[in-house]
Image 1 (cartoon, rainbow, N blue to C red):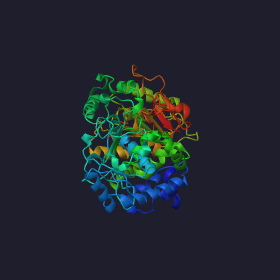
Image 2 (image 1 turned 60 degrees about the vertical axis):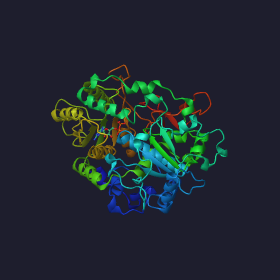
Image 3 (image 1 turned 120 degrees about the vertical axis):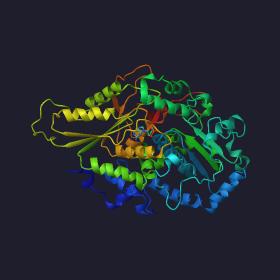
Image 4 (image 1 turned 90 degrees about the vertical axis):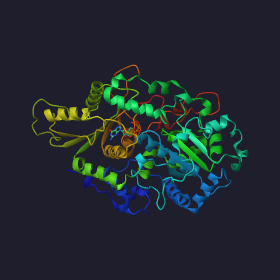
Length: 526
Ligand code: GDP
């Protein structure tokens, strides 16, 4: 029996209880309406305040977005090098960095930031990201027009003089008395580099030119993962935040809010850091009474695959997943900075499957069809760049019966072998697979992977996380642990105390964040 297709949602659910705007034409973006048919209802009620906030934002975006008089005026000011007082429209321009999962997490964080700081969100859409997502805001566009004057991603790095932290260091701005700073005394835009927390200037390895080196590592990883030294992870872990670099502090936010243009680049899910900024805490609380649902709701609001990508998703779903009794997703991600041998990863996955009873046990003889489970179909969906895990799990259930008589069908939509940051087709498949994973009833995913974070958060399902071995070990003793939240993890959290010269661990004082199961120093909302 088809569990997904038999329980069609009621008409009022089409807009996900008011999360989605009614102002779109349905055929322009089918996934907006059809994706929820493949999922269970969201376990998190929507706050009416958030709905109100979204409708207000949409009106604001329409009023100030590309193609409007107000937008042209703001661009003229920017080109003229002026930051006008009392500007009617303010903007935050998102620039991409890293893979699709990272991008989706940072777009959602930037959107949340835009919502609470009253900015219009615009996206620099690189060629590899073109045609992936539908427009999320009715009657307007979130795509940054090509004539934006500061359109060169190369200029955006942690050392850029326009970076807010560098402006502070160079005394271009001061944050000791935000009330006395007039907007017109500020530079025409500010650059916010949100991945600096645990990295020293010279150790920024995630974006920019260093990415070229990382790309090589990815290629090498697919040839011989074990030949790679443990490179990035160690660097990231060793360096501590310089207390003065935390920008999620009231005094900094008061200054930042005076800039009419903000350019932002990040590879982090920094939404939890916004919650920890005192001046935003109350407002965010009203928007998300259940803090665990931040990405779940914002992601379902913002990201809708275009009809082309939706074609991939729906064809696959209807062919293999629509009529099964249960869907179980495994996402296996091997990172270049912590290569894990295939045998070790496969062993860890099967230990997790056994310990958590994710799949039926294998039997030795054909079972009599007497159990209640007999004949039920469990579909396993595997997302991985490599085909080995699929081959072995499929082989296991092909060659052996299950004890209960359940049928296990194993599928993997693609195996791209290498990560390709700049290929549009590659990203279409990645997006399709994130969506397919998000239709699973149970998910087990690789630690640290933002690809997996996005999938389980969309689903609203707490995943089992396949822990990463310690940096000096090849295997993880514990195969997997259940996540306590459906929120993604912020890998490099700010330290709470802002300018006070002491470290405060947010997890010990804020009741709504805790350390992540997979990234010990990371934080997630729950
Ligand atoms: P993270 O690096 O795991 O945090 O996730 P990202 O999504 O940011 O970057 C990984 C990128 O590698 C993805 O965006 C894809 O381009 C590619 N990739 C990794 N795993 C898979 C997979 O299972 N399927 C597909 N199609 N692509 C993948």
